[in-house]
Image 1: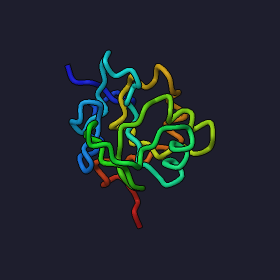
Image 2: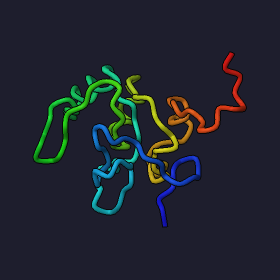
Image 3: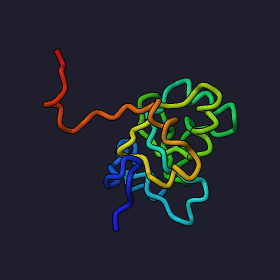
Image 4: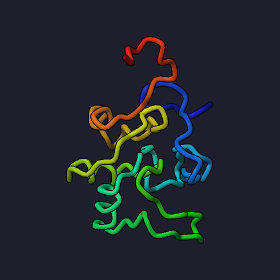
Length: 131
């Protein structure tokens, strides 16, 4: 069975350039071996990246041994629930793509916190007034 997102639907792809996910499959899928819970699809910002570096989680320096390219602002990346929540409490949370964020994150992060930082765009824009 496919993993679910925090909205109740099928987990969508978070990002493929760079290729993200615990399994480097583009999705924030998880499992028992993912001790960090890489379940939040974040659009990283300069502020978030600096916050992560300040807490000892350098997301900018490439680490080829882990197939990690290093991130720049605007990249979509599956970040750990604990570190995103810490950034949230410190006022530096990255925007979140709810449709690509794994429902398992709700074990640690309240849905309301994620919704406050949501950047999802509906697939069907016909009902929106874009004028």
